[in-house]
Length: 134
Image (cartoon, rainbow, N blue to C red; front, side, top):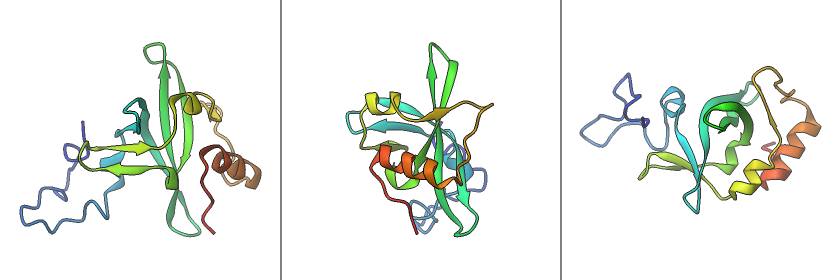
């Protein structure tokens, strides 16, 4: 299901080309989007967005990657700067290998990290080759 199909408020159905997307998108319509790398390998699915309440910007997208037919789901905090919206294929892309995702610092639903911890943030950004917004 793509963001157009999750559009409960008609923001992407405007027939005159004057809707909000793709520059501004509804967060709820993006949850569930798939994430692929530049080699077209499936990396995961967007599950949530983490908003920095001090700045009002998205800090991370929480992405899941399932293991063994959905058993043992691993969650990843992916820096927002690492993702690009692919409007043609209705998904996100990342310039990262599947092996790099497999080695990424992850967590499960019972053990969320302290995402406000400076050391944790630095490690996540270092892993994806991004820099934290000031």
